[in-house]
Length: 502
Image (tube, rainbow, N blue to C red; front, side, top):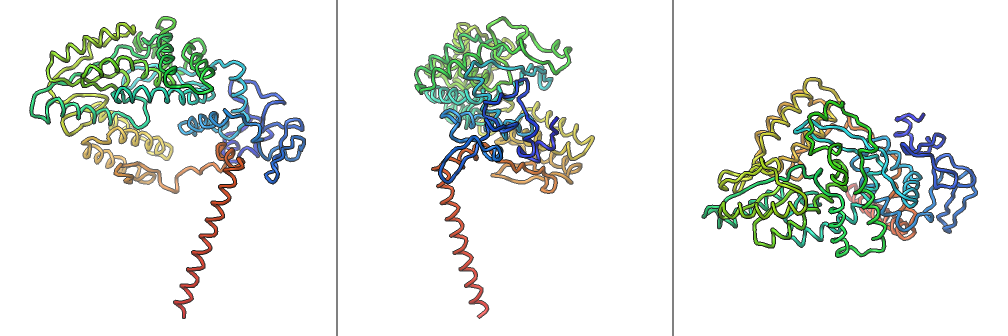
């Protein structure tokens, strides 16, 4: 059995004698594209001098992978795996795929022969509310990132046409941009704070679990026919359809105690919803499709001239009178009923703009924004948990959590909250962490001597670009120019030193 240390720090060459296969999958056969357990039939040698490929040289079988064997789609899969790896680099399984290209190739072949998602992990989060989460296998995560490419292309076109009223799950958009839009809407409705206006928030009840899968696919298909016409359209649509209609409850491993599901509401669990309903929380494609699912409502509401902002299933309306807000709410209810959704009866708030509006963890007021009490309480609770047992391992976890909370506080009036948090942390963790300013943002950083060593293994995408003739030649020219520039600068320096001596 391959140890984690050997795998992570010795690299693929040291691990060639011990094949690593994807979890839950059979080991690639001899005719597969493999970097491990090679033999004379599948060993490859690439000559960068003349571009010849030789698959009979047993002694050079561990040198490189055949770049010629990569099809046109492989670069897209590599990009998808690279995006997936950014968030899962600490996982052994993630490292296995990232540094052993054979397994990625095996995944591509498996998908071409008929893709079916593998076993996922299911658990329950208890903070801030009880919520069921499905964590997909790493191989399935790669597929999610692959289909996200076409989904994001379609979504950006749709949301841009709707004047960017949707801010959830989009690159360049966040709760911060949503709050800024709400402030702009308040300023416009109140005519620069000179006239009264009202702000209302509402929420969709059990949103993810109430989504009809067939309707979600039909809506995506409608927009894809309009905004996506690439050659791989048919293949991508079939792949997205497979993911949408897959029921993860039929093949999953529960990691939380079964008693925790007693606290999960029935409308927030895939185990209790009807067949054909619900999208699993925790899967990348789910949040993108869910955000696009409400795009028809965005189009109707926004085109009617109503000041409207949405972050996934959280909705904020700004109007000059409470009557206009009630009318808009009734219109939203009728649209949602056609989509087999409903507004949460207990999550409707309306008040004058001077009182502020609580939206997505922040309290938005004219010209300023505050962090909510729940976020502040969560920050101090997290810090108190870690200061009970200071250690280097806890320092790594603390760093990630603090940076996450400080990210939520960006753009808010939270100076004293951060000051008190830093004082507590430095009292117990000053040996391992420090705080620095990066682009006017406070970042918690592990000290240099305690940072884990970076893996000295070649990135797959770098490998492909290296052996691409055009890019390889360009890289050589850049390296040559850098050496030339360095030599010129060193000669100038030597001459200057000689002049000084003279």
